[in-house]
Amino acid sequence: MAAFDQQRVLAVRHWTDRLFSFRTTRDRGFRFENGQFVMIGLEVDGRPLVRAYSIASANYEDELGFYSIKVPNGPLTSRLQSIAVGDMVLVGRKPTGTLVQDSLKDGRRLYLVSTGTGLAPFVSVIRDPVVYERFESVVLIHGCRFVDELAYGRAEVEAVKADEVLAEMVAGKLLYYPTVTREPFAHTGRVNELLRSGKLPADLGLPALDPADDRVMICGSEAMLADVVALMKEMAFDEGSTSRPGTYVIEKAFAEK
Ligand code: A2P
Image 1: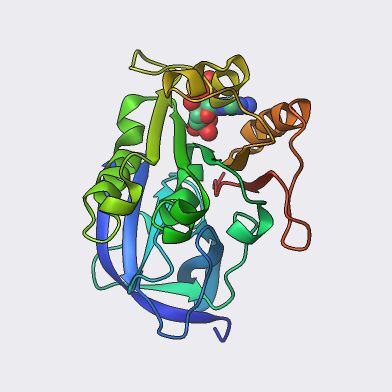
Image 2 (image 1 turned 180 degrees about the horizontal axis):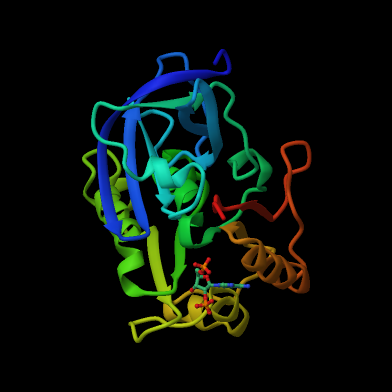
């Protein structure tokens, strides 16, 4: 288990029958950039059973946050969903990932585009003071099938807006746009369609997406990534990396089959 540390579960919250979040202790030596992921899991029969999870907490916090689906027959999540306070989970020692500030050029607005558990890395990013120094607006977009699946994201946005240190920094800058696709709600439709049509920026009083001013971080299912990346290319955005910063970056959301 040399590649992993054992961390203690400090809190667990079930949001729907398919979604839960939890927090763990954090090793003092564990360093990561906001937006990165790490391998986490459980020891099963003496062996690590791990998957890549985005860290849903900021890199200056004492604890680590995670957001997960529950798949009844999923090798890891069928077990992970029953963790309780005091249990131990494995956390890898080498966080990594592409949803980092260094891969994006400076710009005016930062769009964080997510569906499902793809929200998780952005829970970290919206707590990063650097993004509010770099950008005039930070737009958190979260698409789900049903309204109850938005609850964790809504709670995290409210927590940031109420946070002693962050509240002033994010006031008027952090814009939240939840949308659902399978029942009525204030905003409905798929995130790519709402961006393509210009409805989403217009609803927020912002201009249509433009690679001159906008930077985009994208996290969702493989199908969602394909559709949003196609839109980025149509709009002449270019994918960034730490060696060559660009106007958008992507990462696949964790999803156990
Ligand atoms: P829809 O209800 O139309 O399938 P999932 O749980 O399947 O990952 O879906 C989460 C959200 O992402 C749902 O609102 C779903 O819409 C939407 N979605 C699914 N596929 C795509 C896609 N290719 N592009 C954009 N959004 C998608």
